[in-house]
Length: 269
Image (tube, rainbow, N blue to C red; front, side, top):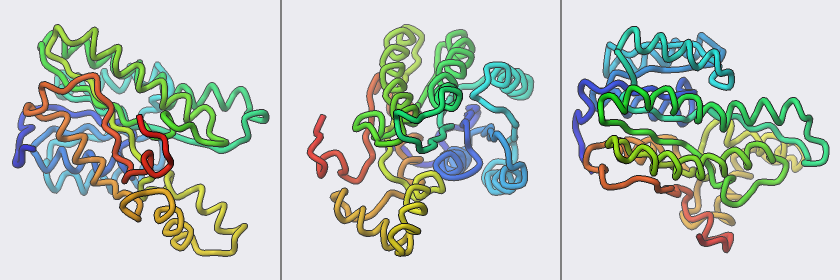
């Protein structure tokens, strides 16, 4: 894996990038010289704090508010990025949201909303970014998916369906964009120490009368080979590797970063 400032002059857009995995990805790219576009949906104060952190490594980073689950916002996001940097060289589709309901009781409007955020946003953003990449005859698209798209996850039907859809879309884009020197890959994350990742344990904590940290530790010991959950930077470094020129021979692949969860649970693919 290359180290150093390998992305000087490249513009990177990371959707959903002001906290959690997205924030870690943005910081890794900024450390290596990329012009980073941070994207957030709401909570401007958190977004501005992240921008300050990223600008410690690259002062040219910008922040754009857009709900990528809405096509009109995606177009506005890219219009703004193209106005500043000309286009997106590296796209990281990271934005995601999971809300728990039993399958038979899942509200139809919420299903549609979550499919838009988790899956359609990847299609809309990739299509817009690829037009610039095709003209430049170079590009990288990395889609952050989840083991939920491989295993399925109870009470998270739209999230699991969308993450599975991302895997299929990744392969199709890799095939169709390969003539233009554009690679497309996905990173399927296991349980990561983020607000979204820990949210299910907060509910269980109240029912079990145990602290979240204890429940997480128990889960990790039972469900992973490494005995712990992942840190956001561990996902981020795989993403930056896939964007690097040294990875130009890798496309259409799904990199599973789950601490061995799929092996422990007996679902080897």
